[in-house]
Image 1: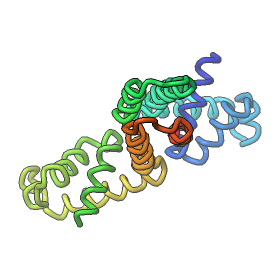
Image 2: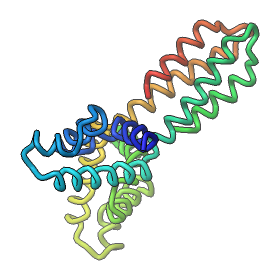
Image 3: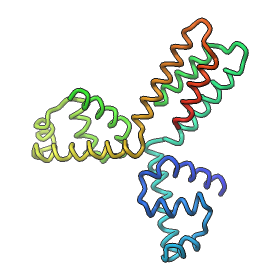
Image 4: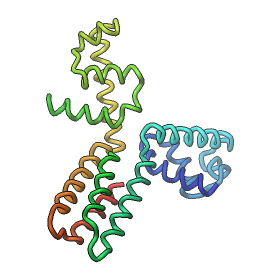
Length: 110
Length: 110
């Protein structure tokens, strides 16, 4: 569940601008501010089931956007490459060849 | 017009997966394969006006996606930084400090 929460937080971060204002509110209360379904239902004066359905649909939409655009996946790959370059740059005499390879891989991700 | 064509080619490249199959077909014939509106209309047995309207709507959608997700803008900024790092790596003794700055900027773009 923690893993799913982390993933949803990331997907929300990448794709929230494609959601409706209501979807944004429910998702950010549920995933970012850790409200319960009941608390969101009370806040918006709707049923707990309505909140649940909306959030489930939004989660599916976020996964669909990720399947199409891969922003989270590319972000992870880029982060790994950037970490690697930063590690190299800490060395006394970093290998230029190795850095060039990392940077070329970064380029290909776009 | 050339500038608009280039921009649309890029936006299409970033966001085509969010379009319907018909939008994808019209756009790729018009922008990638350089078909005229009349030729597309004939190919799909619809009016030239229908093709024109569909393409105009799709262009507006692509601009809307770009406004929300900035994938093309970020791509351009990343390309500039990557080019810069590659230039540095051609030097005999590239500045590690300068490379670290470029890489940190790259990181912030995500």
